[in-house]
Length: 309
Image 1 (cartoon, helix red, strand yellow):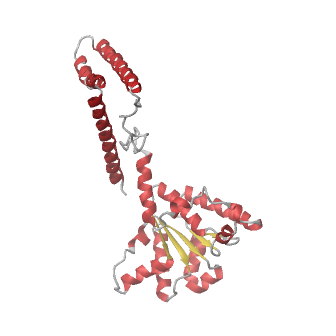
Image 2 (cartoon, rainbow, N blue to C red; image 1 turned 45 degrees about the vertical axis):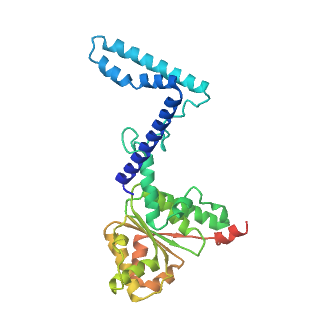
């Protein structure tokens, strides 16, 4: 969702809130003539002020109009209460109390617009709902014991720093067995990065390679440009794909082009250093050693631990 689309959505929400409130006011005026009389006078306040602006005693007249306006509002409130009706009955109910669904907070776009754009970006990143559920806030070190907890505390600090300073072209390599939190911290980083306005694409290595093969061998269409042009590419399960010379070539192309353009990459794999070197060759392994900060995930499978709770 673009900012323009989010603003159109807020405008529609505001129009609905105002329309609902106006309908309720009409209902009150039809049922209670005394309320209708007050509303009629209240609706003329703007015209009275405009008229007063051209008079010699402008300030005095406007002050009296204001006093009368406050008196009428208080009278209306008391009458509604006497009829057993909430004074807020026909007050517009906006989805965002900060901007009253205008989309602006006075100086710039309201946080509700920014959040709407970010939420849409979460869903289009490839991580979807995981971005809402897997955050830094709910990443717990309690599932790691002994030395693993110390190691994972360091990994968490690296990831927090990476997310807060994103934009300098830095890259991360997550290594370690399944169920140790690699996807969770990938999601947490992605959420922070998206909230800053950057684009993120998350995909399994197999699906990335499949898309390139689809285009290369004319099997169909696929958007491979997103893997090269997004601000942050997160490739998960590297090493689980069917390995060929072509997949190694694609991996090198992605890493090399993104490094040259200063675009960040997070690679997540169950393979260790020696396995990576053997599987993808020295050329790629050299890139990983020289341009990526390695985070080694330690401990036991958290999913199995949670099942036993």
